Length: 499
Image 1 (tube, rainbow, N blue to C red):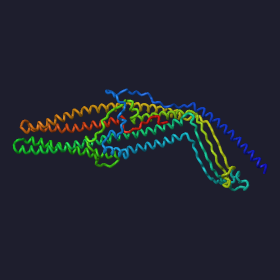
Image 2 (tube, one colour):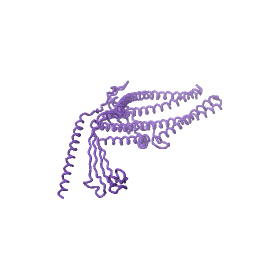
Image 3 (tube, one colour):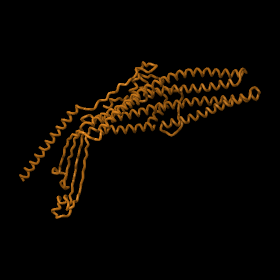
Image 4 (cartoon, one colour):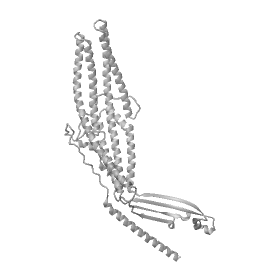
């Protein structure tokens, strides 16, 4: 009994000394790894130098606050329109698809953050094997004792394993930043959809109101021309007018009736398009009036540099650049040695009765160094492609920024021009109203023919329709400017969110 106890103590002492040596070796490897942490091969992202003018072409802005910072609820004061915008932001299919992109990127970002963690697994198994008595295994496990025949053994295993790679060169950190940038790029992508949707809903809403006014004017013109046609017929019967005047009057009536039909069709098709933006099947759209609650015409641009923080497409392009930059870091780190840690521990026994016991316990620990040597040029090719992708992303970022600047400048020029056009058209309508009244009085007193009355009436109708179109164009330009500046959302995201 004493001998058995002494042997056990000797075995235990040897076991502990052996593990002490292994532990010391692993500690030495870890020391080397953490020393190498100071030799990171990855770089930190810095925004590239981009050329941004101090002001927009042809006009200077003293106000540093851009209308893009205005919530869309302040731009649109019409309560009906606000309800439609809220509804579209919740139900529009493009918005819902953009949300799925965000959720997909978010899942990938969570995986990127988990790169620092070890891989752990647990396996439990029971195996039963029967060997030929004439084979090596059969003879080893009982075939000799039985003089031939077969042998059967059973094994019971419960094994836990882990693998862990230390982020020596910063590749895991860069991969985390790359997935974060991809995630934030999809968020910016959703903001692009959001901004465009708000602008489209607002523009289409006011276009429907403009068509309502055009339809009203066309219907009133039909009534007036029908009365004019009847009067002309009576004058012709009384011998005071010729047949040509009757035909011209009838022709003008039909032109007005055709205009009513065309505008009515336009209203239906615009309502159908509006319904689709709401995520609904085509239906009639309730709406207000131009003059009740027009959009806020505050058109402060702010400085051109504000585009960098307000335009979601510019923000998305920069996050795509960050993603490409960090993936280049990842590809570069693949040239350097990998220092994995690993091990396993568990219970192994040939009998179920002593499966979970100290005698059945085993463990393995491993720390290694893996340096890629020849791999069919895969690592070098991946690094070269990553650098090309980074260059492409940089060019795309610069291009997006340049186009954004141009779009803001063009939209603002358009707004100013339309404002001037509206004032001129308003004056033109006043002149044509006077001309129509004068020509009618002259005709009634026999000083002119009916053709002059028709020409004046036609010009007046066209100018009234043009005035409505110009008023809508001014509102549309305001909304377009809001979208071009990046309005429609209020939270600014930046590369610092990656940290």
